[in-house]
Length: 224
Image (cartoon, rainbow, N blue to C red; front, side, top):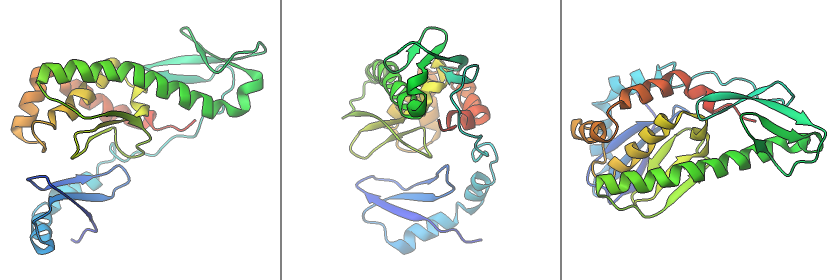
């Protein structure tokens, strides 16, 4: 059983293997490790990698894109809200337990909704990062909300915390889990017992959030 994988070297101290949502295998390794040593370590994880690649919930079939017609629903913070396409002129997107968009803007609804979700993600996520960084006693460099097609979040070697804007569609307790998860990586780089122990102190119900993502993660990835 052989796997193709991409190696990313950095000043990290330990080796980490991750299977991305596009089934690519990324190996993050210390700069001093030789390819032979890395490959030997990867081969010891063959069964784990195969299990990840065969995980049907992690790699679901993505549903069709939205059409942006009245009566259609869009997901926000774990709930579906109906969309109304109206004759009145609205600047962008309006939301009050229902989404509203002008008929004249319907042709660019994809762009407008992505901008709206991105702004909402910034508004909701940044305070959570400040909250959990203080609770954990860690310092981060920058918070970024961006297009991450196959990941929900990331903690970079430069201590930047990056989140996929699509997670704003998930319930708040899932957002809290993801934020705390990435910040715990500033203490423990790998998903060790210590990592999950630290996380469980911050998010006692983190298993509930993990299960929600496993079951519903594909809904967050529906393109507009």
